[in-house]
Length: 246
Length: 222
Image 1 (cartoon, helix red, strand yellow):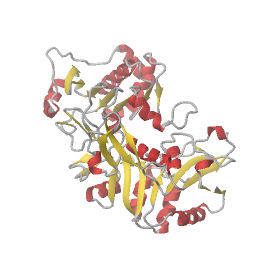
Image 2 (spheres, helix red, strand yellow):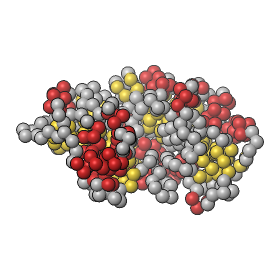
Image 3 (cartoon, rainbow over the protein chains, first blue to last red):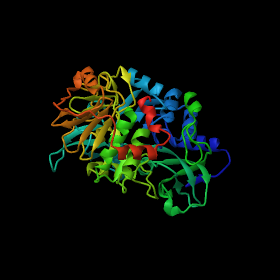
Image 4 (cartoon, rainbow over the protein chains, first blue to last red):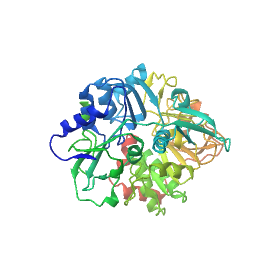
């Protein structure tokens, strides 16, 4: 693990992402809604000037808006995106079809990460049959369960080239700790080919309580305030003004 | 006071569902209702804060959410932008699927919530014909198959989805007129449907005890 404590977090992030993210890469961001979005990494990624990126996040907010604004993104996968109200660039993308948006449900997004973590090409999922989702997202196909005949969705694996995750703390052994909702980050860390964690602080914490084991973490970079303008418990809450300035 | 009527009713409903292990609040009023349900006797009910944050050290239960739903053990109250006569839901957008004229948040968890053995409540502050339609524009939640109870709470009253059709259980004051203004939902109002002005005194007291500042009122515009 290439942990880098202190120093220039921005320089470290730029260096790591420059090596990890190619044009057209599938980049997944952790957190959910307005919690723990990896905004320091998102800003570094935007500064690199990549093109054709595919962005995936279960529940997006400032991360999706910032990357859509950077022009780096050719495709977005999400089950929902909002700020404190509707998210303007997300709306525009969906209404114009540029860039392309693939709508998921929360559960199918989780199934896609599970499939990736297990090395499967797809995974069956019990919900979402009888909806319009398979018609608008080709990663979802409705079929009959081969054993029971019940209608199910076959969900194509979502294998991020890089996952960007922001956490409260990293302990002495390099495990990541989160003080509130982990959302799907532990699963995301198992699904991605490479995991870049940014963190608020180093802390003496019990590894038994870690949210994400160091087994899954490739790079860890100290980035205080790295989720702003989204929240990172227990350090700071949502910055409404910062959201409006995206 | 619609906020008290609907929040108190939701608290009664959750308290009357002892099989629930977890309730997932989606708004301040739904959290107040769940906490009031604990006071009404559902002491073991856990209340989630997001996907994985329960009281205690448990961390990684993202997949537990869906397991609990499929086993009938997780309660949630949602507010879709459209709900239709067959109980289908939409949070994606207005206009054709995949080509919205007005794009909204996205499907979120509606596909998982709508057709499970778990009880599901639709809590809508207004009984609006824009929200309550004959058929949703984008089917995010499929028509429920009847596995778990589906109940709609609005400013017009309380309605159950029975055999694929909405039926009034009780009406709020003025509810009959509101129902008539949103005819596409096809609500049946049986003769003798009672009017309800307030939740039970016990539920009202529980709601006031857990929410003395009235956080529940904001989403109802009170």
